[in-house]
Image (cartoon, rainbow, N blue to C red; front, top):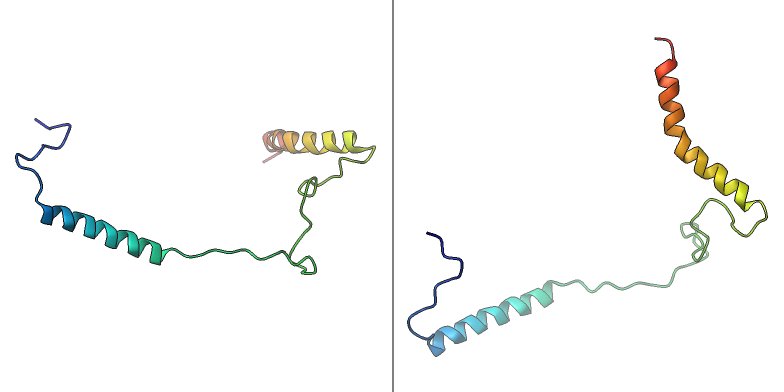
Length: 96
């Protein structure tokens, strides 16, 4: 039958085997820190053509501060939600 827990040795570990265990884990830890890359970031260059404005309300295709926001928002949502259904109806009823 399979044991759920590893068996406990009959005798305690010797100091040499304990030292080897700690030494190998220390070597692994040292190599792991040496293999890690140090990532850093630089400040965004706003004059660059590849960087766009950041901040609130810059990642949506409409400006919520205008007075026509309500109508534009719902037109955008209805178009996105209704397009798959409209395409399905068109595909169903088109002549072959």
